[in-house]
Image (cartoon, rainbow, N blue to C red; front, side, top):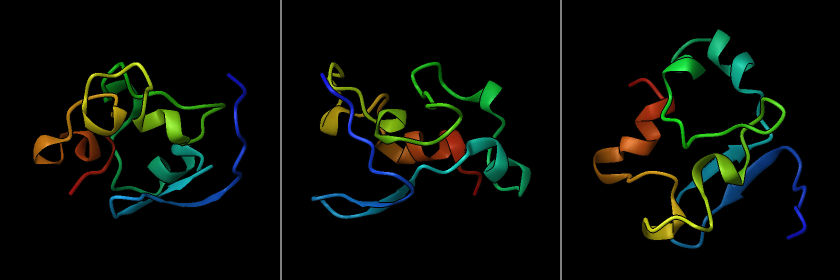
Length: 83
């Protein structure tokens, strides 16, 4: 399929919640509160180093909302975000 470039911004999800896309992950990591990319689950991907829809979603996933891994207990969120 054809990719859609939505640029930098915040993607609002139908089921609530939002997440920035187009953010350079290493730049965010360097500011703290994020895990190093080498520690992330192999299903989490970046696109030219940036967060995109496909970072958290995969249309072939069997998880709810086509998430790349389960988010039970905020597992997906906590792969990147340190609390």
